[in-house]
Amino acid sequence: MDLNIVKTLTDYIEELGQLTENWDGYGAIPIYPRIIEKAQWFLSAIPDKYLHLTNVGKIAPNTNGTLTIDFEDNNNSILSISFGLEYENFYHDIDDVPIDESEVIDMNPDTGIPQRIIDSLENLQNKKQMVAA
View 1 (cartoon, rainbow, N blue to C red):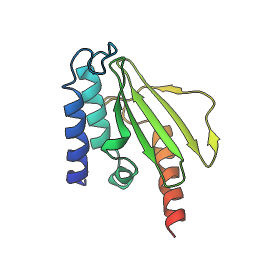
View 2: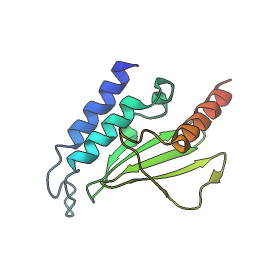
View 3: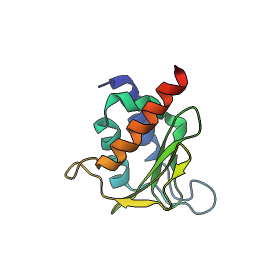
View 4: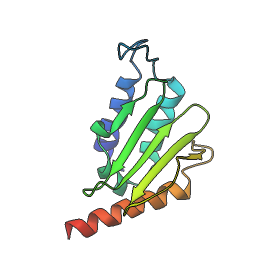
């Protein structure tokens, strides 16, 4: 595990957990602690080879107390995961083949990371490698 990258990302998520009521000046609520924990677990659980597809600039708090992490390659292909209290939503657009709607998934230490997420990360990884070659 690349502990430096994981630590940088999870520390940033921890900082987002310190946001207070109305953090955006428009009534946003703080990020729920359970969501902070799930996002940190996810980044610690995914294979290291996918960590370079994201960075702190691609992790964003949402005004409803949730959190989104985007993974991207150099050609604007994206996997976007929004962490919620009960379930996660994800959207991907890889090779100009977007899924029609945000799909609902359950992702936590008990259920693990769904294969659909791993497959999307692998597709991004492979596309990034092809562009670099």
